[in-house]
Image (cartoon, rainbow, N blue to C red; front, side):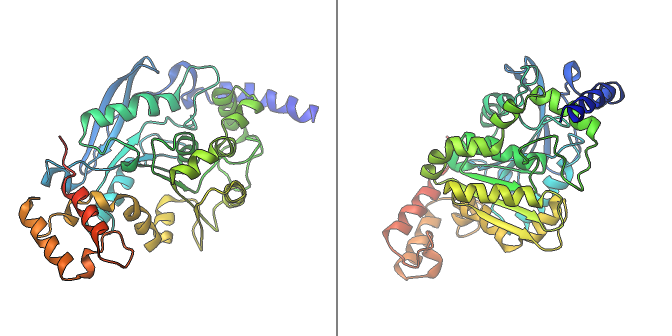
Length: 364
């Protein structure tokens, strides 16, 4: 063991020289270049936690313009390791296509800047308070500048790879802020960060550098910040909140084993969650979305359908007013299956109450 650890330390110092351009320490990249993508806006804000300017990207659906008095739910997409903005165009494009085709409800998609390898975690040395920036500064900035549903019912945190474990960390620590947590192809989830999974793409030199930069090469701090520990510490709150949790991974993904272990851990804790192993899918976000199929749509719809203006604008005239209410009351009185808004198979007062909630969901 001693020889192994000494070799790791030597590799770390060699790696520090070879990989100094990886964006650690004083060169923390809080501001990225803007990405040009359909309906995506590039934003800058002043972060109190970081003490500097921070960037992020935001996708707004076409309905955001079509219904200017409505509020929209928000999905926070946490990217994986590597290039900070590489997922902005493909992820916003996927959501745009799914929304315009009516497969999922309209939502705002916020894509924070998590840097290349910062693991969506506050660094032990305090130099890069990544989690604090996202939770304490970014969420309020989004709610202040966009017509959001500014409470937990209108928020999902989702991510892939590094972002998947980040979604688990942030979502489980704050079930009061997020109604949904989506954990896709997540990693790292191993109990020893230096125990590299077979098939992973991070070389040991860089792994050691990440370990030092984020967790101070401290196994105790690594475990303290691990999603397993956070889930254990907050299991009661997660269960009581009714937080909807899903976890998905491809059967060809190098993170499969660690995701299966994490699934077993959540099961032991009694945390309700959906777990999917997707045949023929490797370590790719598009592959996970495709592999989930109808279950993917059901996840978003189960959380955000009530905010879809199309479900309230029943005559399709682009306005939500008394005429739409009359149409719904006619459906209710006639026993139209479309009036069963809560999906319990019974058309009654509770469906009317749900429609009225949706009907009155304008931003003030």
